[in-house]
Amino acid sequence: SVQKILPKQCDNSPDQGRLKQHMMMESDQCYKVCNVPGKGVGVVASRDLSSGTLVIVEHPLLVLDPPRDRKTLLKTLGCDWCKVDMRAPPELVRAQIQRMFLEKTVKRMKEDEREELMVLTDKDATNSNNKSPWGVFLTNALPMGSYRVLGIYPTVARINHSCKPNAHHFFNEEDKTEEVWVMEPIKAGEEITISYIRTFCSKNFRQELLQDKFGFSCACSVCSLTGEQLQEDDQLRLEMTKLLPVFGLLLCLS
Image (cartoon, rainbow, N blue to C red; front, side):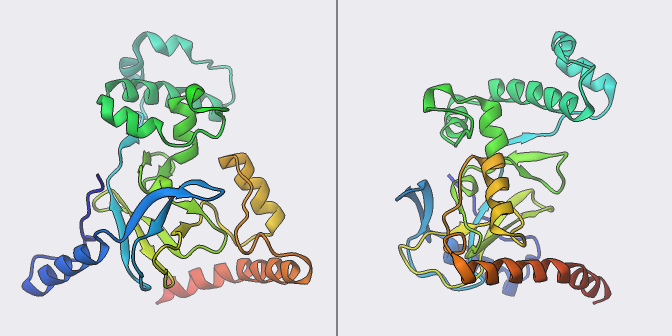
């Protein structure tokens, strides 16, 4: 089950306590995980949701945070350390170590937790019988503040991608949860979507990135555009990319 808590900015004062209770009630029973035509499993609103609604606050099912010093690595991996190909490029050495730690972590999980993990998508698996924990992890892991620490949030992982999403997810550093907030009104029965990538780029670039990272071709409303409409959308996203540094500077000065 998904544990719902309030973001850390709410303290224990009476007013904040009422706000906490209100937000928990607002987010309760507002979505369901179900099959979405043409997409497999997804998350659908079970009632009308207004902008600013907190939909999900979820603790990670699994966290991958390998030790960074060699002594602890050797101690933790034990005999498996000799399996690491130290002649490989640094990023591949890091991936080998991450995979070994992941496999050890999964073995220590409770059976029901492993089952919850392994029902998630593995982009490299041809069917459900040849999924691997590593494949599931690569397809679904989210950074927990940085890409050094990665986590699996099983409900958030079920939310499908759109290049024009109606919700936004972010990591709450204080309580290590992943939060999902509604950005624009969502009708009951409508799918809740987030973006898996930065979408301020052309359709071709987005499609290549999504295929490589997640193993699917996006067919959202903006990726379905053609002709002049597609050109206009690509150009608008390019202009937004140019403005992002300005927005960042303004935020720093504010």
